[in-house]
Amino acid sequence: MKLIPLLASVVLFSSCATMQPPSRGRVDHVVLVWLKKPGNETDKKALRAAGDELRSIPGVRFIDHGTALPSDRPVVDDSFDVGFVMGFDSEKDLQAYESHPLHQKKVKEVLAPLSRKIVVYDIVR
Image 1 (cartoon, one colour):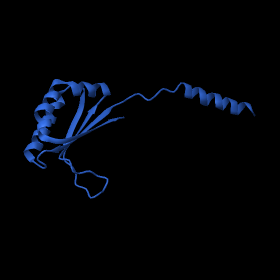
Image 2 (image 1 turned 90 degrees about the vertical axis):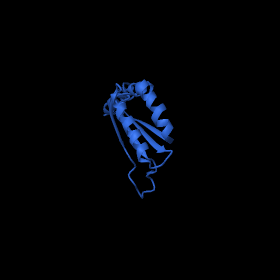
Image 3 (image 1 turned 135 degrees about the vertical axis):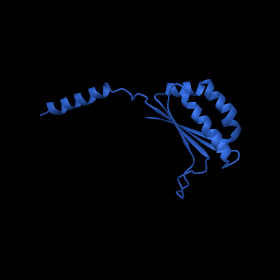
Image 4 (image 1 turned 180 degrees about the vertical axis):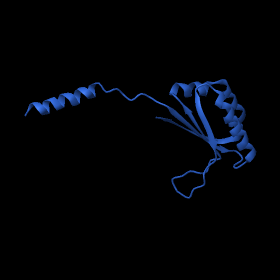
């Protein structure tokens, strides 16, 4: 009878010793933008067009964009003007995207001049 708990302990602890940390998987890149001219439709359109152009960068799985859904819930921040959700297969792909010349150009020529605030969330899954 003492052998069963001993065997169970050996199996349990030996499996823990071989466990590896989870590999980093896909990355979602969320960008929320507050415009210098809140609600300006021309500026929103310019941001969305720039986002559409970024789809051509290698490593981008998808880019979607939209505006805040109005909400009365206190935990929801619906004060931003335009939001982007982008998907990448890896952190490396996200880093390559961020340093890509087209991304740098759109940040410099469109995003930075039109935005008063930008918040980014990167989520690994």
